[in-house]
Length: 213
Ligand SMILES: CC(C)(COP(=O)(O)OP(=O)(O)OC[C@H]1O[C@@H](n2cnc3c(N)ncnc32)[C@H](O)[C@@H]1OP(=O)(O)O)[C@@H](O)C(=O)NCCC(=O)NCCS
Image 1 (cartoon, protein in one colour):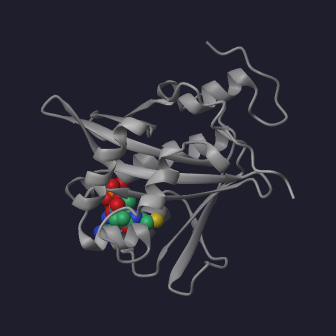
Image 2 (cartoon, protein in one colour):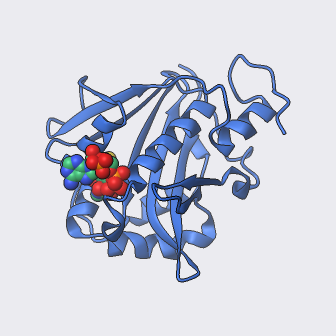
């Protein structure tokens, strides 16, 4: 069994992996690794989700992000687990409008993800934008496949996954859930900062470091 790489030592400057993603209409969405300083804002974000959204995201009833999960979330890279937040500028202030976590398995070269978008921001293309950013981030880790699981009745997530080209099937970890996955192809351009950083430092498996500006 392959040991899980620990990226926390490599990720010394988390801000370097920040992406600015353009939403429909051109509004910039910032997607960046979560940092310790974001802990309170992230807790407030989870408390602010509707009960249904929180249930769908945390796969069960919880009024907030459990402390053990918060702790894991804040240790980006440890055990090949990563967490990002999506921010929009609202009245000049950065506001968390979404979050995602993903974990890479070196053994299977699969990356699993889960995400949420704040209720007031759903249906505006932010979830889709985050998923395509996650595809690039997963690819930069050497991942060949991105997958997720969601409740069978979660029409929003199922709709998003279907639209983004995910296929359904395979065994979900729980009978109440469906499994969806997408094969990833190495990008020929550099659509996210993680890919660029990975290319420069030689993280990408079987590839020599690239000379990327
Ligand atoms: C699921 C979720 C992440 C989707 O994010 P979003 O920003 O609302 O999604 P988008 O606006 O990018 O929508 C993308 C596509 O998803 C589908 N979709 C979105 N809402 C939908 C709904 N209510 N019913 C069916 N399909 C829907 C549509 O195909 C949509 O494309 P379109 O707008 O061109 O029709 C968001 O609703 C959410 O956070 N829900 C609560 C937490 C959750 O369920 N997380 C998933 C756990 S893995």
